[in-house]
Length: 99
Length: 237
Image (cartoon, rainbow over all chains, first blue to last red; front, side):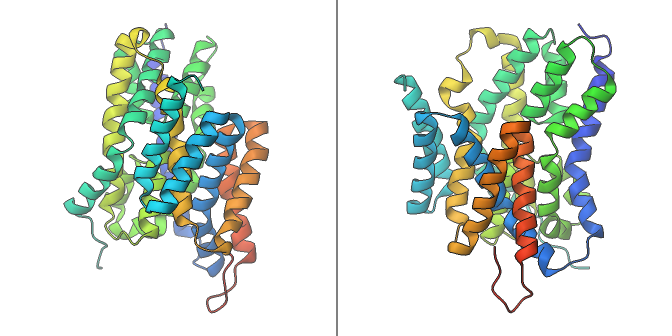
């Protein structure tokens, strides 16, 4: 379908690698400071909250229940990976029942 | 120079965490393979894209651009850069920890970086993980099932069940919710949570979820930097 597929693949691959390396490499030129340290520590929580919030905003009852279960199980058991898997499985079961 | 540990044991620990991602990412790979096949791409090219890009959102967006019939190299590059802009933040947050392994180990590890294993690795760092091979380990199971899913999806996608029915789309938010719940320690750490959520909702609604994630990270980081106090004082995050 696309005669230039090899060229498209190479360009896409280069862009993907650039995204993975650029932030890491750029950090070498940022001088250490307490503000940079605070920013780096806050970023994971902010990103996780953003991902969760967007999923809740576009989802319905099934998504809300599945993510709530994942969060509650993680809080109770401190097993975050198990909690996430439980949330996904719960969501799949709810969908199987048509929710 | 003494380098941080980068051992087979740490790699294996990462693999065990990465295995938890395997099923939903494999299903997502199936979906990509199916979409690629429907766009007229053979399984070999579809697998090539999955190997070279290893990012579902960027690959699906690239297929959309290619399907217009008017794709240019610039448009494809811009699509991947925009869809994967969040990886700039991911790489930056990993750098202080990962750079201690040296560039020959750090840079290849970054090729295995994805949304979910970044979350797992940041959580592990927060819990005291010292072995820098952990990140690469977390990336192997997702890569294997991503490629396997792509091949199967491209060859047999039309006869497979809908990945959404099996909860594949819930994988990333479920990991984010669970790990966030464990990483929140006290009221101060709720500040980046609130800032990130509000920013993602505002920007994501206007510009799509990829930019929503970027906005969440930048806003959370920016707010924390502006309100940070030097060591010896209480910090905001």
